[in-house]
Length: 145
Image (cartoon, rainbow, N blue to C red; front, top):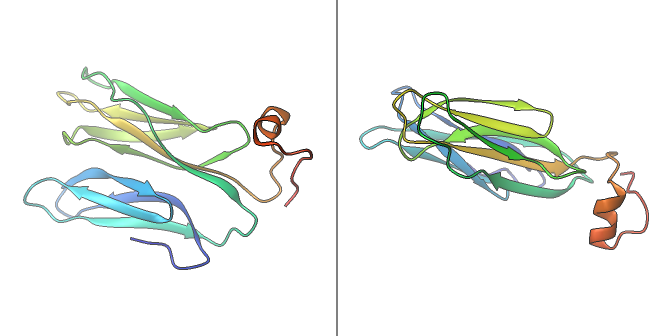
């Protein structure tokens, strides 16, 4: 699924009536869903009209351990907001995901093979950008969009 021109991807997910989702990945303003062999899935892109937003990023954690309810986490950088959090597992091992502040956590199911936490992050209009981020990017004032 791809966001229409002028809209920004804020989250991405996978849907299947047949419980066939392995998860989804985002890249820019597009969302791709992955299916377990022999099942059908659809990608669900959540898109918003966010003029003035910037620094959109697609992040992924390392693979979690394999014990029951093992977690994988990824954190959005300072100066950004977590707008989407989901679980991805090539081994059909997702037990769900939760977001808390800028942190996205994915959970491995019992007997699972490990999971990845996936996140979509961006700086929203009016959001202050920390001085440390401004120094890294060469900005000399806080953006107030």
